[in-house]
Image (tube, rainbow, N blue to C red; front, side, top):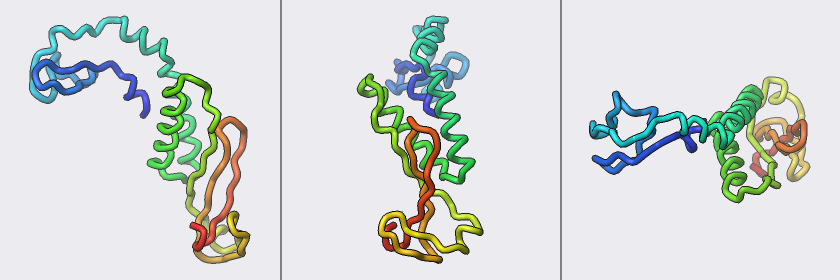
Length: 152
């Protein structure tokens, strides 16, 4: 998931490419085969990873991913939401103020048959449209609205 951005990595002296330490094959670069003798894979990296709170981000990301995909959201859209939230929080080193989200989820059988009202224009419709899950990560709960074909 998103813990890959903080994973321990180094630059290969042979091909000058960024290589993650967990991708090394018997201490060699997986791209060119160059030996990585000068790479220190000691316990200091483990302590550094724990200090940065990668585990808490991983748990948070998993929780959001699981909740939203169980509701029917696209895994790609959920991952984009999580990475955008993480980037905005870690970039400025200040608490995130904009934690709103909006994801499209598939309509169930009952949703397809009943009369729906568009959340944008207020028009009533039966066929077409989209079901949108929205809310705020800093507050409990979410809201499900519908959008007609014109407002999509």
